[in-house]
Image (tube, rainbow, N blue to C red):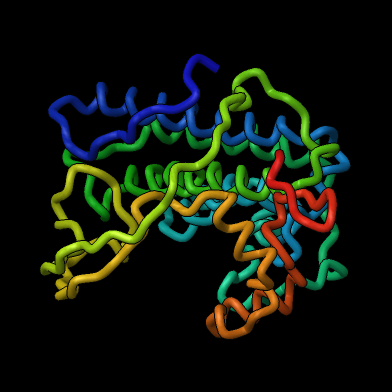
Length: 287
């Protein structure tokens, strides 16, 4: 794997074949990086474990991003034959984090890791062929078949981040070192935090239809909000600051949590962040 990551491909340009080459490189980089993330798991048995009780085991996510490509390509009538209908149903939809539904694991018969890897290899070949053969024009617009390819790529890049979060919550004995993901050896006391006042203003959100980068449907359009003066902490909340919240009973104090947060506490029985290790009566944030 030559690069750990790449900048997103732009939708504009003047040369179709050059753009095709850019998309192909971006696709394989994303596919490689996603699979590299799963090399962190100590062995195949870890694929069937949950690092987060409100999520599926990791085998689901390993298959999910590949089936997303196929399901979208079929729904947009870019292809008409499926690769593996059983997988494309099994791995299609994850747990809804707003409701934490579909957590009954007895309903699922997860396949072997090797079978899912073979499926991913087949999807890689399919998407690579489509990138090289699909007709499209520039700039790439939402009605272009290449838009669906970019949708699948960007969806997988989202899951690179979310899978790393889930892997981080695994017990350390389930995780192994991977040379491409160097462990940060630097640590120090966090700077003294303080609240600062920011001046209010009119904030405009949204992107135009002709924006040069891919966007999800909820990114387009324009929305304005008048924000009054407010206070915010000068630095991000450190582990040390959050430990004070935990040790002071923050996870047991319902007044600190909204309705969705209370459901999370009930479902997960969390008393502190899942990736923290409790060594004594007080918590440690070592990883």
